[in-house]
View 1: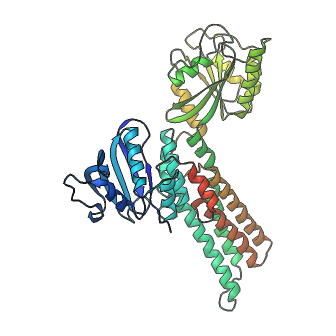
View 2: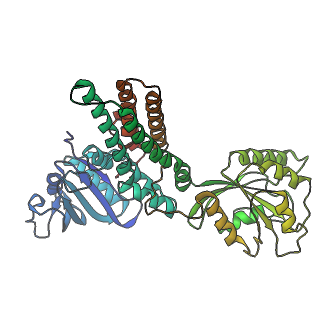
View 3: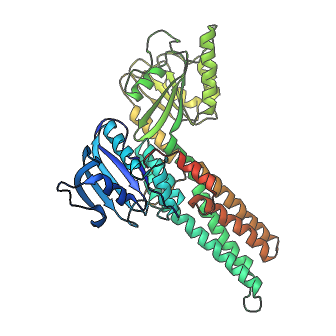
Length: 458
């Protein structure tokens, strides 16, 4: 049972119009009562109704600190299921810090990072997957990542996991009952019934597992590497995507020698773009290092954008790049379409199996088609959040993989006509693996680690 009362500043520690200091715990209302005064000095917060707002002032004894609004939310109808008081004050760093220190002086303890959400989890308001969705919402870098996290916070992953666990524990209960009371409960041919249930559970879990790569890309972004010969327009493309002059663009070949990185959004999809040195044979030691780096980054990428200089004919450097990307997920941009093309589109298409788009980065021509190709390539042309649940967390992915392996062992035991108690062992392992996702089979150390990544005040 959590007894102490915590306090933290729940808004950013920068000067702003409004700041918020939040308390949670049994003594939250009593502590704020010691430092709050209503305009007439007669109001006591412990006597007010829950979910009401009260105008007044925060004092440390006779020292006025700030004019505030105080929101009172009584347990269990609060974010943490504890008594919660939020003090809305002016957003200056000094005033927020002073109110925090005063609350500590009168009985509260400074909260640890993520401790409010940790209490919501420990008090049963949310499961662990929903708690992790909170930090994902805060860290969302694009609309799709935000939508995915909101769906998880609403409990859609929890529902899928609980449905499968309910099915598994029902099977375990039947097997155990049949073993304890074989005279009244017949388990003959139960393997056939169990096989259908396990097959269905594996189907659902594999669909969930297959969503992980999409989920990872939604959350972290697509690692995108721009390749091409010197002066093909790679740096111009980076500047166009980022909306600013991040890379130096000149008519001199080999200007980009090191790696430039920029995070950009394309139709709401996050791209972590890396502009590389132009790939060509060179005796320049520095440029040579840049070329080798470009090849290494291309190997590790999710997507390669190969920019071809359409105003020149293909040469040995282009053929080296084509060989480099032949088995990679890539989009080829035939650039400088505003000039006379010496590399026709049909000839380039005949040499590659990846999509080719004729563009002019300088004029912004053809780039809408390029953007749609990215969506088609990674998300089958659409991102649907109506009922799709995406795995975005490597911990969840590992737990689902463990569950599938355990369920496959159940199928193997059924096929080998093993005794029913063999089924129970692997079914229980599957049940516990899924419990790791929602927090029913995890240790205190893991919980502490998960919440340590949260920001202060949440």
